[in-house]
Length: 391
Ligand SMILES: Cc1cc2nc3c(=O)[nH]c(=O)nc-3n(C[C@H](O)[C@H](O)[C@H](O)COP(=O)(O)OP(=O)(O)OC[C@H]3O[C@@H](n4cnc5c(N)ncnc54)[C@H](O)[C@@H]3O)c2cc1C
View 1: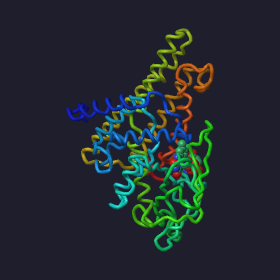
View 2: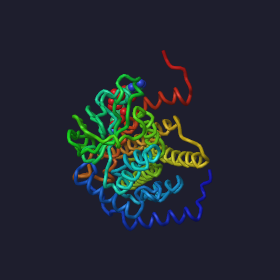
View 3: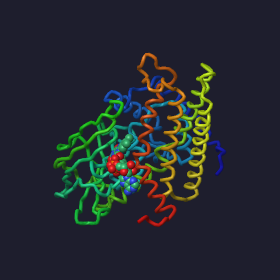
View 4: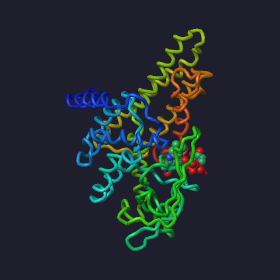
């Protein structure tokens, strides 16, 4: 692993930093879990696209810069350092986009990728169902072929940003007689189709970050099938690998949280040195060290990939590490803030950085989404450690 940047990489960093400094919104945008915030984030994504920064690792022909993993890491570092808005189309750009590049037809690449990169189409992920979360192969939503169309029926749930998204990618049962993991097909569904009902779900903070999606005789062209019919499980697992691996949780996000945590500790100590609980220092130091370790591990992974390696089941280790680290850092901040930790930004007595509360609530979801951490531990036991199955 060589951490020295080449002249070309330094120039790329300088260009990204300069662009972000002159374009990133000065004030935070409203939350993308509100209609107003969603559209404000779409506009920001369009601006990123116009600067060719929305999907840096994509090929140039689809609006990217053909950046390798090192440049992708550099861009992510600059992005989080600049404090630019969260990525409203991450399900599209970071999950579905790479999957389409891997298994999509030439026509699908041309049709979907540029609109995704510019966020004219914002995507949500329609995998989970009321009785199929961890046990994803238990999905019951059906797709039945009728001439040039699939007819979809069923219910999806927990679709992040589904309340306002334009499209959903989902897996549907196409051969009910096949073994559970076979007989599934990956289908791209426009949410404006007749027969689709999107019902927003309010989260803990009251915003509609999720939606249930009901499908009643929804007709979708068979051209919207991604990968082979009845091989949707393999396509979904490729997407899940992108989600658990390096593409969605770039290290700088956690490095920035660690920086804010150290700054919070320093600020509180300056305000009232006698009130400081020294026992919390360990948690602050651990947060910093964990974030650095995660960052270096990502550099190692990138070196491994550039040397021709692949990421397999060990992506599950990564997912457990970042999700638990995120909770620990936010919990440490909550403890440092004491009674002020529970105040939202709008509270008259809010002090320090009220973003800690939102961040803490969101961090709690980390061990659940992208496959729960219990499931990741099963995968590690089974496929990384080759442990025998329990009785
Ligand atoms: C913030 C957030 C965003 C999400 N976004 C999306 C999205 O965009 N699209 C989408 O499709 N879904 C989304 N989900 C849903 C998510 O994928 C599921 O919640 C997750 O897969 C778990 O499924 P479940 O909720 O049905 O829980 P269950 O599968 O019912 O699990 C309940 C508990 O049992 C444990 N458990 C289950 N099976 C086993 C086992 N074999 N071994 C050990 N423990 C087990 C689980 O770990 C968990 O603790 C999101 C969830 C969250 C929290």
